[in-house]
Image (tube, rainbow, N blue to C red; front, side, top):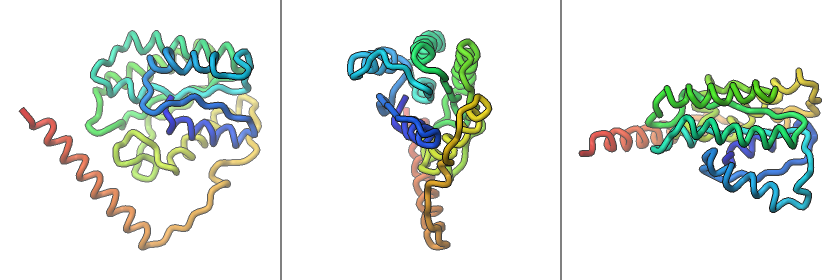
Length: 213
């Protein structure tokens, strides 16, 4: 998984009072996880055979946006990663991909295929499943509609905790209760204008890209 997802996992671990280990890399595809992150978990760990209370996986957003998307290869790689986590963690939590992903948006069939594979793998190993298909909005996603904002990271962690609580994991503190911020009318307006400008810039760039010969 990428580092944005790693921050979500960190918030989740903190809420549960668990130690946290991350091997996340920005821009990771499922093939990168299989080829690099799983070997790193074995080769760079002081305790390569250690077991974990919880393993978290949020993967696929970069895969479905790639030019070389391959649904079968994604499903195979995903199964390998899920097997690794299930073999080393007492519980696994997996998250789906938002439908309103990226600008320009990838083919919806890609996202549907990836999410179906994620849901299928979660059921296979009895993992906790967190549905992010409806996750969207200016407050929780950056202007690229891919990376979560700081508030978005907390919102995703809260959803993961809500899904994990029925499984018996004790929530010691809520991530939303660990933050403090002050929002003024001027600051909110400045943020809205900045977001609108960046969004318009991104939209125009994408339109020019589609019009280019």
